[in-house]
Amino acid sequence: MAITYHAALSERLSLYSRNKLKLGVFGPNMSSGIALTKVPERWSGSWEDNLRLAQLLDEAGIEFMLPVARWKGNQGATNPQEATLETITWACGLLAQTKRITVFGTVHVPLVHPVFAAKQFVTADHISRGRFGLNIVAGWNQDEFDMFGIEQREHDIRYEYSAEWLSVVRQLWEREDTFDFEGRFLRLKGLQAQPKPYGGTRPVMMNAGGSVTGRAFATKHCDFLFATIRTLEQSEAEIRDARERARELGREDFLGVFTTASVVCRPRQREAEEFFRYYAEEQADFDAVRHMLTVANGSTSFRPEVYERMRVRIAAGYGGHTIVGDPDRVAAEFVKLSEIGFTGVACGMVDYLAEYPFFIGEVLPRLERAGLRVPNPA
Image 1 (tube, rainbow, N blue to C red):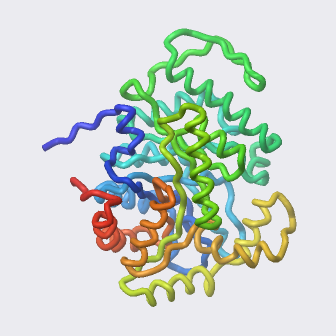
Image 2: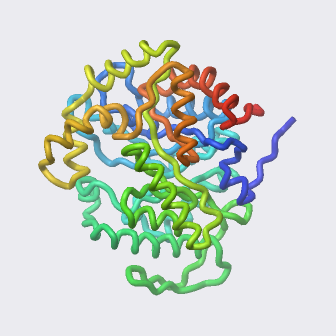
Image 3: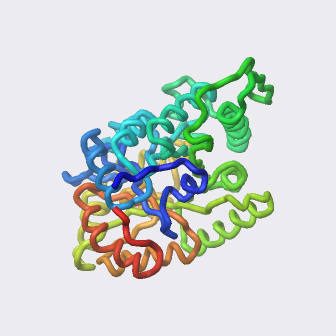
């Protein structure tokens, strides 16, 4: 029987899923994915592998794919993330050849004019019949912005500009009349746009914000906040704060917080720990890690203690949470993330195509038994 998909806002915001904990992948549009490692089995990032992965996840009921917008690599021995697929056109290609999964596009706001962006996102939304998601990034690595000849604004001002930019995009999605926009940063004349987003609603929106200002922007303007875990205790407090801020703003529709985790799941705990040590320590591309820390700090130097504390986590997966173990241990870690308030996890793996089938077959049933997910209707 054919399945008909609608674009009701409630369906969009649930990522077309009844699962309490949403699952996805992070960074598959990049060579090496989110791992900074020299192991030969590291992720290719090729279009062919991305398409195979998207269709595998789609059939398994995994909710989303979240890309990273990159314009140059991280140097080191392997120059990880050097080869990247641009995220909106990547999303369009995947959405055209899948049925249920939500695919996000990641956009650096200062690099894309809002009139162009609004039309671009609507095109992706119509291709997918309402499964396109927007991940908004207010700022990024200055060395990549230098490729565009753009100097970034002061940190908090970036979010003020992003709010104006998003206001233009949303008005172009929603208004039928021709209008002008007069803001602090943008002065635009005779604005109009057709068609509107698919089904008369809008794409789901996410923002990655680690600062107080970034989290405030997400809770005011977006459906999800995407946050990196420093410690579980700190994340739990930040999630409570985000939900409280949303309530104060009357944002009962704020859906919560997503995070990222590097996942190694093997039949036995010892196997998982050995593989983690192999790719994230013994074969880590630590020169690339140093470069990434330098760029992230906006400096040519950084404190040695920062490098020592973060180097393995960055090599494992962009500094995100690490989940390493047999299926029971891995499932228990996801349960813990849900209990402290996370509503979604974007997973990184060394080789998504090789590792995700075991995760699907062994971890998903355990999460169903834990009440976090329901059986895939397929």
